[in-house]
Length: 438
Ligand code: UGA
Image 1: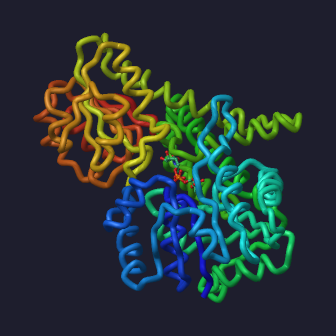
Image 2: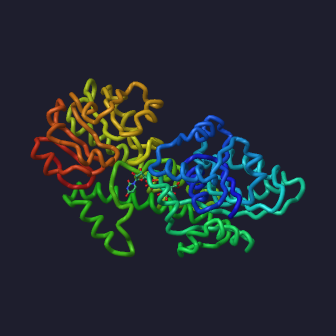
């Protein structure tokens, strides 16, 4: 059993802390955000993430999971410390490492024995070296420490499952002792034969960007393919499924849509471009993926305008789905944001419904009419647009929708509804890459 501190209680930190405590370790999650820690101490989970409350409650009850805003104390009492604070996009597009470096300084000042310091936050390649320099600078008593890059691959919405059943665990370090510590931390996974990739720090840091950027590239590829399918009369779903049945390609992350969003792909692709630029290297494939993604979001607005076929000024549009993906209340870089901006610019009234993300969007767009049910969001609308593939939308009663809307027009950017049913009900509709226009 290891004594572990996780600094940062966002998606990655909280899920990792809860998961590591579930592996049987003694974990203390620390955050300078006292409000967040207060809520966690009261048993409240500050983010919407399926299954997270259960695993947190179970480990808190077992006494293996604690929360504190006293970050130095958490560091002093732990042998293994994970840095899991945010690395938001800075003004120039690069990752902002202020929080990571601040935590490194706090760790350096509070070293009091041999400790292993692991970075889980997504950081630009080369950051490990900078963290080590900071650790050494503030390590006045020269306590020995090991440094590890341990990137995380969990997805929002399935974070707990992804953490507990990863495809691989990446451990970037230079000392054999550090690999041994991490093998111990991930022991239940290790004995279950989850591959533990032991490599150097730079390789581990690169693997994270290489993985995210490749997935983003795959999405942009299928989105551009979908656009071609529309023009030539092909069905992108059959194309994606069939090309994905080739084991070398895989069908995953080949779902066309309104463009990728979230806190990772948009930020990490831009950061990777910044890293390549800083090294004087072109990264044309990722540049194209980013550009195609922006284009895809604009394309959805153009599709809606075309579907309405008239000025949007004074029209009422129903938006179904605000989160960047289902099973989360996160709206960062969501396709709904450019769509709302576009509609507001055009003078349309927006009624919107998301099963959990209404509140997250309200802070950005208070003038949108937020509804508690999809039925209210589509009522008396001139067109409806689906932007998030929540299961709830798959099961909507379309006949009921037909009765509620003013004009039966529907843009399905996630391709979740039956075109046959929509056509039979008299909807004018559009989608992404299915080649069948109203
Ligand atoms: C992503 C990665 O999938 C995780 O492995 C990684 O750990 C995480 O970033 C991170 O770096 O922290 P996440 O952003 O939570 O996870 O969500 P994804 O499921 O990857 O979806 C990202 C976006 O791509 C969403 O907007 C989603 O709708 C879109 N997407 C995804 C598609 O449009 N098509 C697809 O086939 C898959």
